[in-house]
Length: 388
Image 1 (cartoon, helix red, strand yellow):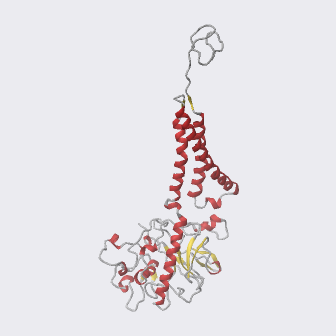
Image 2 (spheres, rainbow, N blue to C red; image 1 turned 45 degrees about the vertical axis):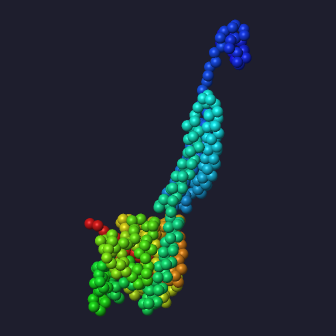
């Protein structure tokens, strides 16, 4: 080392200068680990490259399909670089902690090293929790809906075999579609639907027809629920204060049936209702209709739907439960995941009635809508009653 008095070079372990005999004092220098700082920088950059594109892609259900080509490429690169930087930061963080421990206090920055090792772990755990949240579990829930609809189709076959090949239809031949039936707790169908002795008149819901599967085909109420259909829950009579009667003794899913049924059904009231002899390609049931309000009152904008447009315009016509694809039960009792509502006979829109020769876009349904033809699939569900 250099002598501070004469400037001569001395051995590193010398206690006094060999030339001027001045006492040599050693200055202990403590520094922050550059390796730990580098590890933290890699961890923070990895977080940006990994979580931000991840959040954008999974929080917007239409983003990945509608974004431009260069944006999509940038996201893919970010997804690849993010994990790479996490691996580098984790390894550098571990190595820096080891060096700091062996330095005898001459190197600091242990917290930087620990942070660099833990940040990647926290980010990965967050991404796992995010992808398993109800909002982003669309694919597994869509599979559950497919299973529910498949079971519903089999229950309909059982029902039709015992009812002159007719699919479930509540009320009488002249009953009209309404938000609620007269009395869902009634002791007989006449009081339940408000039928005359000759079975004319009456008011019925779409769900009251589907509820016949609960009454006569042993189909459980919980199988009418899609877990991705927000604000919809299994029908439990005890929630409405009734504990001493079996669920098969009722005539609908309670006083608010729209809250207990996630699926739409081909309009059963009128002259074009389905039977076993109908065209096998006809849609019988599917996920909720996008142009009928969900339980919280929200409804999709029909103006945004274009069957010949881009993916965003097509998705505007898909069910709100699964915007990328709806499950559809066909008359031949098979279920398909359809990426567009134009999956009926001749690309008919299953959620609208025909508008003259326009069968691909059609007319959005409302209370009282009916199919325009025997080949016009019109899958509807009950709209909620608007609160004053």
